[in-house]
Image (cartoon, rainbow, N blue to C red; front, side):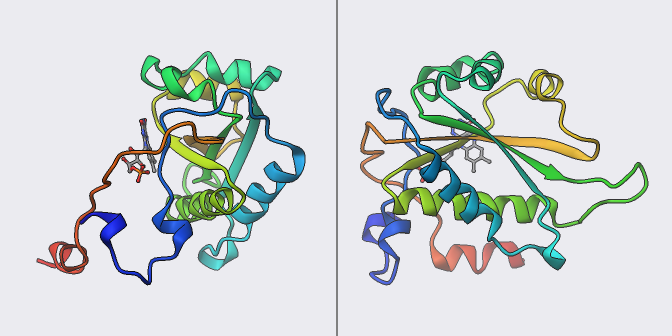
Length: 181
Ligand SMILES: Cc1cc2nc3c(=O)[nH]c(=O)nc-3n(C[C@H](O)[C@H](O)[C@H](O)COP(=O)(O)O)c2cc1C
C-alpha cells in the first residue's frame, strides 16, 4: 500500500511522517522544543502506568553528543550527525535477576517513541529512529542503571530531504489476517 494513497481518514501528521536521511545541519533544537518531545513521550500509556522508558537527549555539539557519536555505525554516521539532537532510548526490563520490571517494557517504550515522533512532526521536526550503533560500546559509555537496556537512538531535526516518493506498507487486509493462521 502506498501511504499517500491511503484512506483520507489518516491524520496528516501520520500521513506526512517519514524518516529523513538528510537533516538541516544549521538547525538547533531549543529547550522548549526538546521538552515538548519528552513531554509527549512521557504522556504515553503503559501497562499499569509502569512508564518503563528512559530518554537521554544530546544536542549536536554538546559533550554527550560527542560521546554517543563515537559509537554510531558508519551507515548511521552518514546522515545522523546533521540531526539537531540524538535521543538514546532505554527500556526498564528487570528489577533484579529473577524479576522482570514489566513484560510490556519494549511495547511501552515503542509507544512512547511514537508519541515523541508525532509531537516532533506537529512542531515541524522529523525523527529517524535507528539501531545502527555499537550497542555494547554505547552501553559501556552511558552506563544505564541496573535493569535498563538501551534500545534505539532517535535522530531529531529539520528534514532536508522529502523522503521516498512512495512508502510501502502491508495492507489493512494483510495486517488483519496474516498473523492469525
Ligand atoms: C526500532 C527501529 C530501528 C530502526 N533502525 C534503523 C537503522 O538502523 N537504520 C536506518 O536507516 N533506519 C532505521 N529505522 C528506520 C526504518 O527503517 C524506517 O522507519 C522504515 O523503513 C519506514 O520508513 P519511514 O519511517 O520513512 O516510513 C529504524 C526504525 C525503528 C522503529
